[in-house]
Length: 298
Image 1 (spheres, rainbow, N blue to C red):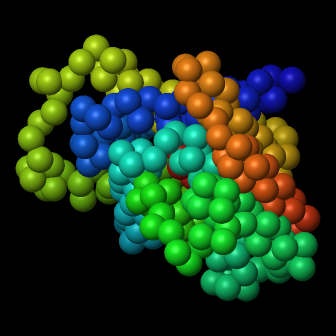
Image 2: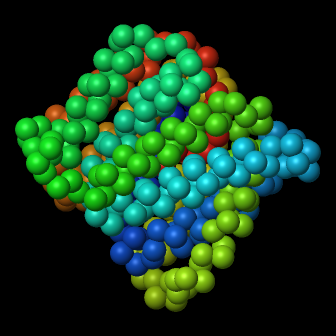
């Protein structure tokens, strides 16, 4: 029962990342938000990794510095910049639904890059979920696929999904414990991001109270608590069962949006249903062996 509660909380906190991210991005750039988020996360994850996994960081850094650096560029820098950049142009609801396509993208890329087994049902599930995303991108008018100018934010979320899928594939091949791997990737990402901060002014002096609350939330809840709750649960119930709960991110985002007075369109509901059904088919009728998540999902 505890693990189920942890899985629900992990996905609730990840959903909050979209809501708070939408508000904060009006006051702080995606670059600074990504940097601040992962500096704080690194400071917490470092002692947590020592407590739970007892890593030998010097040996790990020496042996795996290249794949961990690439993982940081993809899963921490790339994914977060695309995510927060997308929220400048699209709604949290659209971003969460498009992000729900990620597991299906991982299945497809794993088939081509890792030669993993994929059934006809898996492929059909990917197509169904892709139709759902296109339904959202075209606002319910699939006949506009080749005629419409798509929302820049929705397209950025698609790119974020591809980047995350590549990051996840690298994670499958890393023989490094998940918290340790994320801590190392965060360290390399912080070093790589730091020189670019001088291109933009320090934004913290002009932040509103709402902005500070949002930053504190994003640094603590989706970056640390969600990740820990997720990995504790995966160890107990397995990755396949836990993966079903990832669909709650879009559900919670819709609920929070509604409670805050936002509107949910018919195209979002229909497209979201297609995405969730497609992802279920694409990911749940296949080999159940999979690694724990090596990073913060959202």
